[in-house]
Length: 251
Image (cartoon, rainbow, N blue to C red; front, side, top):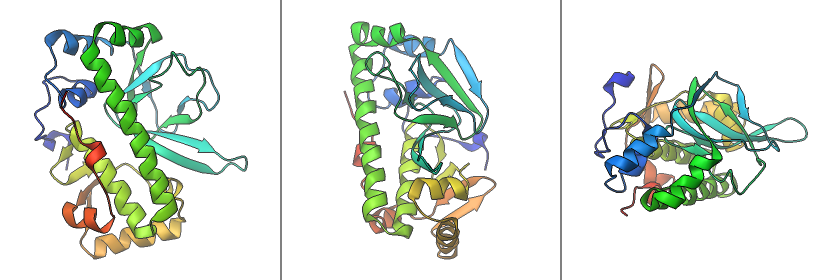
């Protein structure tokens, strides 16, 4: 499985930038709107894996849009233990409210080689002033981030180990599918078992056991850094996963 195999069935706009594909799944973007979104990528940064680019408690100086790769939002406890809050995938935005919240309540680091668009605060203000359709789309992005954090709370508080893992895998698959980063039931899977443990509040022993169990039951398949969810409807029902808030909406 390689990136060259990726296709999408959501018919996003023909744009190289994932944020345009993401918002374009909701509405027909004008040429001017597409050009504006692509223009936000004029200043970019490449972050190597395991490198922080946002520090907990540090002042926001820019908004970041994920162009390629994966990032994590996380916090460290006073004893140094890591809790991963969520994953930032292609098309996702970090620090969208740079003009309202001055400091970050989390750290963010590259999970893989990461390409970011670095957007100045004035450019973010320009969206609400000149592009109401894009502003509505970004409001949806914010609402979806709250829903994703809500799902994480439910996973940690109310689901058993196997359901936690499946629930997270389903979330990632749906989010990647929206921006054309899946091939049918397959998606690139760069996470280590340590990452999974720090996300799901489980020990490495638990994570290893659950991954082996899912493989043995034929519910997931791994191949060269890619993961396949073999029966999405069955997994969705078992993990009590509701994908509705992750789907595109029409504006």
